Image (cartoon, rainbow, N blue to C red; front, side, top):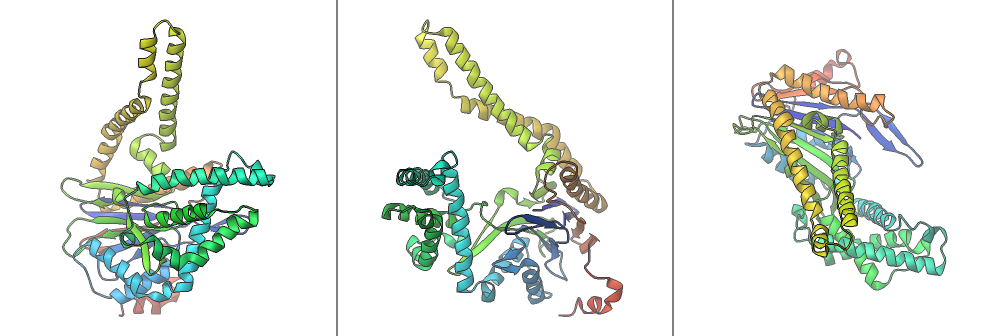
Length: 430
């Protein structure tokens, strides 16, 4: 896991990232503290990129891909940050050695297995005995529960109109033909080997769920968050664009822009703080309350109001049927929405707006210090509690400004610069 943040105002952008990377082994997890997550996207222009979550794309390290792109970009520039982002996406399409067909099918298998395994476990989470005691009756009941869960998901997925750009015209027939062997192997692993047999109808539902999840904009699968940030040639204020990238199927890149986390500084929006990955500590500072605690308060509000209504109904009994019916008809969820909306207004007025006003006036040095401090506080919380220390290691910090370009404030090296003069001499050579 990781924690990265971008802080923007009219002067510059401060970027900060920890160095922790989590490696999943056969039986456990190990955390290393030497990962690089901030990169210059151009050696000549004020543009950079941060990565979080997965450190590789289809098995190839992002660091390698980014540096190949940077070499190809050379001294070319674009008018906007969005144009850099779009050019990088095109670059991924051009380099087919990242995504040949066997690699595509291998990663599609991982996507299918992890997704459907999680769905099956969720469907049977309260009925584990059905698989632990695999009688014919229990297996049949397990299939019934799984199919019910599939029907619920398909109803929700069919209503989701947020489709990844390159999958808008991606048909089920194309997916089924390309991934038939992969899907059959996944069914064998998840069902056949456990003595569960799928009817043709359930087999079709299984495939449609994977197809729909592949198309929609969702962040539950294994993915990389890429945050493009800096200035285009025609931009005087910084722009931050977060992109979610996961895999390639039939040469279609599964990616989408997380528009809710995009930040573009202007006269109307003079300051912004954009955290990514493990953002609970930063969100607490931004909003004045821990997000988990905020959700608990909302759940307690709904629970208390429901119990209050039940107590009123108990007292009324059968003395006033008309009033009892009105009380039973109260929309508690609507009241909960209004409660949450009022709380959001208070958080915005008392915490978020004052903080953003302060950020909009910070100097470059203060932006860098604030960005580093936010990452360090996230690390400190993991360090002093019993949570896994999934944020840690040296904090890399950089500043990007229109006039000075990409400037490192703090950066770890795996080598000593004084022993590698040739690296410095060759850095700006095409």
